[in-house]
Amino acid sequence: KQQTLAVIKPDAMDEHRDVILEEIRGRGFTVTRLKETVLSREMAEEFYKEHREKPFFSQLVDFMCRGPCMMLVLTKENAVEEWRALMGPTDPQKAKETSPESLRARFAADVLHNSVHGSSSEQHAEEKIRFIFGDISTE
Ligand code: ATP
Ligand code: MG
Image 1 (cartoon, rainbow, N blue to C red):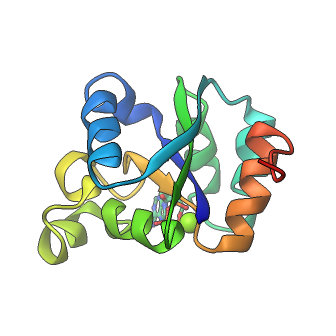
Image 2: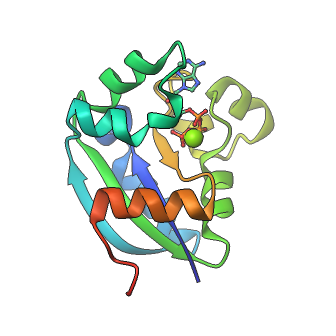
């Protein structure tokens, strides 16, 4: 089965964490790793390094290290794509139009504060899981 990295972002931790976890399990994902972490600035910068040149990068880093995140490894057939589908589009405004059941449609405030992260490819998933959890590839 495939693994992906899911993150419950700081904006969703206080009010929506439990319902997001319920939704994840209800949709048939197995949570194989889970930890709460406050990212340092350096870690947040490294985590989103692909977006270093974007105009929103410093806001994104500020946001991601402002409080605890929940880091999860999700295992399921086609986990990468299925988790992205459950999250919905990056911008919750668009999510409300195209996938009102999605997590971002339900919980996100705006395109920056959008409640959840998910790896965008299997290769990305492997890299980010190793970055957050260390080497668990043999499990
Ligand atoms: P993620 O990588 O967090 O799962 P994503 O793949 O849907 O989200 P990306 O394009 O990778 O979207 O952007 C990474 C994150 O940067 C977004 O989830 C959001 O928090 C922030 N972001 C993206 N676009 C914007 C924007 N135009 N303005 C502000 N923040 C943005
Ligand atoms: Mg992304």
